[in-house]
Image (cartoon, rainbow, N blue to C red; front, side):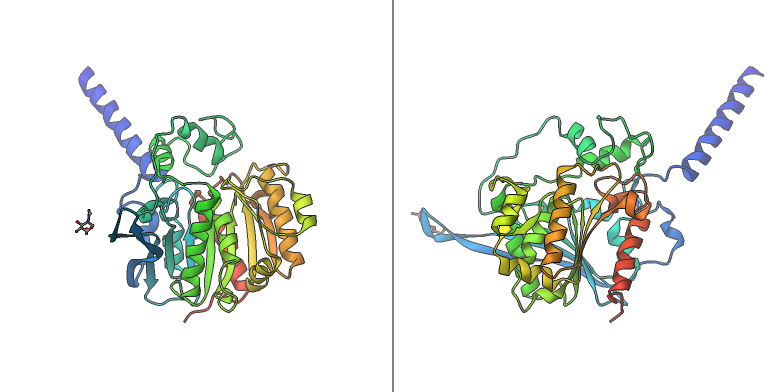
Length: 369
Ligand SMILES: *[C@@H]1O[C@H](CO)[C@@H](O)[C@H](O)[C@H]1NC(C)=O
């Protein structure tokens, strides 16, 4: 009798946990999870990848030996019925963050493909799948980066103490946290690399490798690289870049004028987080070329944050030079709550993308081929 009760209780518990796990927490990454399955399949015309940029270097010790290196890697996905505008997704930590939401649900890549936008995933020279660099480097394990990731990605003020008014992350899912913190590449955040990566992007646009109508969507330090790339694209090709959506950009580009330098203050040119000053002519080419630039901030970002302030100053200078830039605070300006440093991977990423779709509609950039 006793054992039947125990068995019955066990069964109830098992049944209960099954029901809650399927309704409340979506299971972790697997092609079979997610409510996506109820939707129509994503139909692609083609997908693939290619290298762009790079150089052939000669062995200083033997001139008949060469090494081709420092190229970027691009993976592309073209929908069967595409829109005209393509999205170039430029990471800071890793491409993975564009592929899935924190809980394993659809990331920007699939959300955009479903909406008919061609998608390019970008790994700049030396990072990710473009790690065939021309220079030697040392990978050193960085103990403490898990704890830093938690705070830097704005999940909470202290490691594993989530903001108590909500975070767009499955906070009770330890596997989601492990997935997030391990999805990283070595970043090489020094200015020399920022420049190299920006130059190769400019080349990709110039050569038409990313299509005729592109929007750059960037994460963190990717935003700095994109701004710089915008000043490097040639004058007759910059109009291919229709806009820039920079999520929590760490690093800003300014026109090289005495009054701007005075306003911004002293900078360290070696550091990979800017700011950077470029010739006025180059700055104007960038600001006048793009139809829109948005610097977007997640929740829990104070007005005093150094980078938030910098984004406002940068937007002002862009607008003074004929551009159309705005700073968007997701909570204050758009009513979205709990967004992290990577809003495009957050649980409400469809709402965050909805704001981008609004901009594209406003600018008349959402048409089909
Ligand atoms: C230089 O490189 C070529 C090609 O790899 C090789 O055949 C040759 O032996 C090398 N010369 C020396 C001196 O190592």
